[in-house]
Each structure stands twice: as structure tokens, then as C-alpha cells.
Image 1 (cartoon, rainbow, N blue to C red):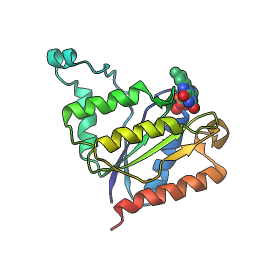
Image 2 (cartoon, rainbow, N blue to C red):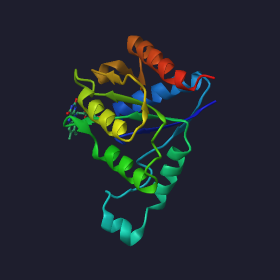
Image 3 (tube, rainbow, N blue to C red):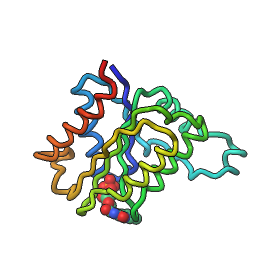
Image 4 (tube, rainbow, N blue to C red):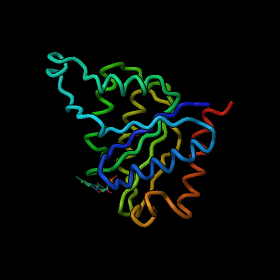
Length: 180
Ligand SMILES: Cc1cc2nc3c(=O)[nH]c(=O)nc-3n(C[C@H](O)[C@H](O)[C@H](O)COP(=O)(O)O)c2cc1C
């Protein structure tokens, strides 16, 4: 059994990205693996600034998140798209974790997902997040999962219908990383 850490780049109430992530996590659990869901809204983590780190060190909340990420067997990350890129929250989280340990993400199977209300499905943001994790030599799942028209596809907080079946198939491909 693998332990998969999840986090979402949106902490908005009613976030479609978090709903997508939670639906994917349910399929991971159904496949017999453990989910460790990190809520990035649980603590007020400052925007990274080297002066802050010099003065105060690494915040305890960041150390705790980094420890969970560093000991994970894999990661599932929901990547909302703001102006064609990742949210500041997501990038800031990645940057802080690499200040704890540069190699925390390296070599880990990472699955990237995005949802957007429009037709693009967050594809531009996924492209840039892919670029970031490729730079960090991560074992990215070869396909990202993109959910367009998310307010139609998500019903009662979960991905529904045909999109649910498509997500299940994508998760099956991702968990194949951990088979055996
Ligand atoms: C500052 C800002 C920029 C946005 N830029 C994009 C964008 O480039 N592409 C897109 O598809 N949606 C964009 N959106 C709409 C978001 O996809 C939408 O608000 C979505 O619901 C955010 O994800 P969440 O529901 O997980 O919080 C933007 C929203 C905000 C607030």
C-alpha cells in the first residue's frame, strides 16, 4: 500500500479543484492506497521571502507539510489556473517545501489535475506546473487530468457521470506506478 499525499492550490470554499482532487483521492483509496490530504488553508503560511527565513527560520507549519511530502510515496496535486499559470498559493507552497529540502519532490510519482469553469480545463496552468516539476526531476504521471466546464461536471461536491469514469481511468493509470 502506498501513501499518497494530496493538496489543492485553492482553499476557496466550493473550490472545483479541491472537489476534483477529492474525487480522485476516493479512487486512489478504492484501489487500496492511503491518502494523506494536506489542507493548505489550515495555517497562515507567509509568502516566501529570504529575509523572513533568515530572521524567523522555516515556519513550523511548513516543516510539518514538508515532512508529509518528503515521506510520501507519491503526490496528487490540484492546480487551479489563474491568468494562465498556477495560483500563488500553490507556487508558494512548492517554493517553501524546497527550502526545507531541495529533493523532497524528486523521483516521486506526481499526478497533476486541474478544473476550471470554462472550456480550457486549466490546461495552461497544468503546462506551467508540469514545467516546474520537470525542472525538479520528478516522476510526473505522463498525462495530466483536465476538467472543463467544472460547475456542470461536479455534482454535490464530486465529479459525476462520464467525467467520473474518465477520472477513474486516469487514476488507474496513475496508481499503476505503485503496483507490486
Ligand atoms: C485571478 C484569477 C485569474 C483567473 N484566470 C483564469 C485563467 O487563466 N483560466 C481559467 O480557466 N480560469 C481562470 N480563472 C477562473 C478560475 O478558473 C475559477 O475562479 C476557478 O473556480 C478557480 O478554482 P477553484 O474553484 O478551485 O477555486 C481565474 C480566476 C481568478 C480569481
